[in-house]
Image 1 (cartoon, rainbow, N blue to C red):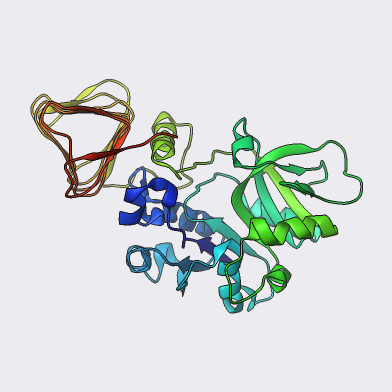
Image 2 (cartoon, rainbow, N blue to C red):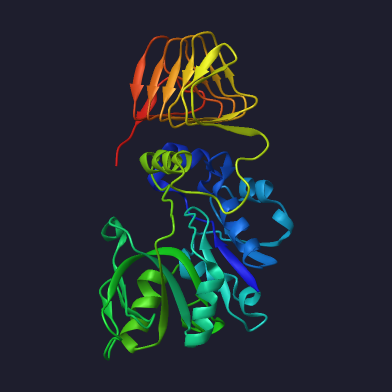
Length: 355
C-alpha cells in the first residue's frame, strides 16, 4: 500500500519563521514534523510514499532523503501550490498505479489515530473516501463535520448528505488523515489549484456519494501558529501527546521529576534538552522548554515555555517566556525580558505573536 504526505504549504500562519524554515521541517520534540507522518505510514505497513513539495522543496528533500525510515520516497514538485486536491492529481500516476486505496496525511499535523482501523472501515463500507475525525471541545474552530452511528459522513461543513442518517450525528473536526480510493482523483480537475475540502468533498456529500468517517479522541497536534507550536510542545512534555515511536532520540534527553544541574546552569523539568546544549553560570531552562543541539543560554539567562532552535543563543541575563528562538538566532539584549516573541537569525529584534 502507498501513502501520500501533503508538504507543499508555505506555513504563512507561522509568520517570518515559516518563510525561513519550511513547516514540514519544524521540529516537534527535536524531530522534524514530517517524520511523524513517515513513522505513522511505516507503522501502518506502507512501503512507498509520495511527497508533494513547493516552499523549501530542496531543504525538505535533503532532510527526508530517498529512503526515509526504509520507505521508498517519490517527490512531486509543484511550481505553483496546487492545493490539497491538486497535489494529489499531480501525483495521480503514482497513487493510482496499483488500483488500491492509499493513505493521505498532512506533514504538519501529527495524530495518534489508527490508520489501519480507518482502512478496514473504508474497505468494509465500500467508501470512495474515509476521513478520520476527532472529537474535541476545540473542533468548532477548525470547521465541524458530522458522522452518523454507521460511520458515514453526513455533513461536511455546510454540505449535507441526502437521506436518513443511522442514529444520532456526532460533530467533530477533520484531522487531515484519510483513506482514498483512486476513483476520487477522477473528480479532481487537472492543471490548476484545487482544494479537496473546498471543491471535492462538499459536492460528493451533496450528491449522496458514500463517504466514510472514523471517530477518534486520539491526541492531535496543531502547529500552525507560533503559539500553537509552543502548546504542542507543552502537550508533548506533559505526556498528553505521545509519539508512536521511540522518543526522544539518542541526541536528546527528557528531564522530568526534580530539578537538575546542567553544566553551570539548572533545569526545571519538564525540559527536552540536547546533549550539545550549553547553559552558562546561573542560567536556567524550564519548565516546558526545549533546547536543541548547540543551543546556548549565556550566564544568567532563563527560558520558560520556550523552544530554542539549533545554534541559537540567549543573551546573558535575558528572560524569555513563551518564545521561539530560530535557528542560529541571537535572542534579546542583556537583561531584557521578552514574552510571546519569535527571534530570527541575524536580527537583534523580535517579532511578537498571539493567537
